[in-house]
Amino acid sequence: MVKMETDYKLNPQNKLALLLETTNSYLSGLLQVSRAEVIFTFARNTNKHGEKLQQSHAEVMFDSTVRRALAQSFIMNLMKVCRFFDSGKNLDFIDPTDRREFVKLSKKVKQVRDAVEHGYDLHDGKGGKNSEPQLHEHSEFSAKLDETALIFIGSDAILMGPLNLIEFEVPIANMVRKYGFSSLHNPSVTQLPKTPPIVR
Image 1 (cartoon, rainbow, N blue to C red):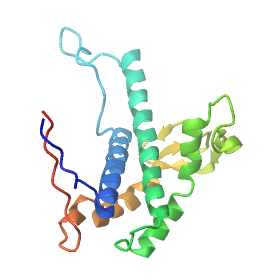
Image 2 (image 1 turned 180 degrees about the horizontal axis):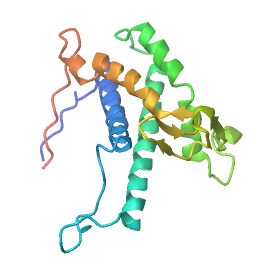
Image 3 (image 1 turned 90 degrees about the horizontal axis):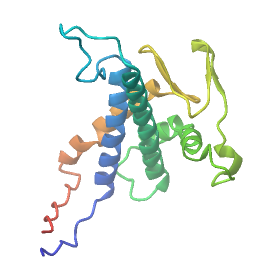
């Protein structure tokens, strides 16, 4: 057996880059689906003439499941980024303005995350009644929904509780540009550690 290296450790820059890139990948997938840039279809969804059949119930359910999985994964990973910023440790490499603006934008994320994670618990879990799903109105879209629901309104909105997930597109993209993987090539930032050998 090959002995694992013991100095494999991610520094704060590496951790933030991984968190942001992962978070952005879920949001990007969600946006591509909302803009019909990605369409889910089963391989055998054509007739003998090669013509596409009407979308089956299984396809509709699969499409809905993938959308919800992307949205919830985005929220969960965005919450990790928020906790990273809130830690206040070894964050000298982050512009204080970026940090304040991002935390301000993300204040409602915890409410949604807690409702998704604990909203249907049969007891008062962590957070107690704050985890209960609540209705939120989006008058501009004539919509009302709780944190566990997900509504797509064309390419204008992806509503989840009090959030419109599309509003995170530009801020997340800016953070990825400044603190994502590309930032690790900056000589002033420590490079990723060596990949540990495969254990055989």
